[in-house]
Length: 203
Image (cartoon, rainbow, N blue to C red):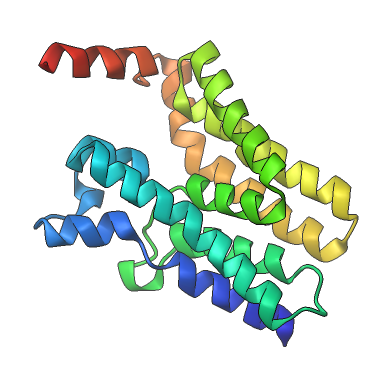
């Protein structure tokens, strides 16, 4: 029962999608603008840098809070924080009240890394930045963490439950980023330098 409750707590936290809420307050559905993704990066594109920061911080925080809540409620279940954090990732990607059409889950995954160990969080954050700068594609940078972190957790925990949960997260995250990979292969994905160049041109 504690396993189910941990996942459920995380899922409910994850369903609170700030990019969608702010977008609705401003009179539009963020999933119909920009990259059509209900996440921090599209919030920057459609609503500005400040909105993007608020969304990004919340998306990280909600997974972290879910993990810490489960850890507090179920101290005897050592993997409770992992289950809750994973639930928050799935809640962000598949929110029931938004027709199961949410974001891609990276920021919430980072929230889980923060609940795991602040050093893991920093390593993942730096990896995203470095790989993005090297490849010029944010999607490649995010995929490094989306794949690397679950593998790290599977190796460190040596638990069947953690392996299953992390395996599902890995597959889901790769699936959500598959369209970006296809665009990169076709040369259609907009790179970071291109995005920054367009913003400079506007000023």
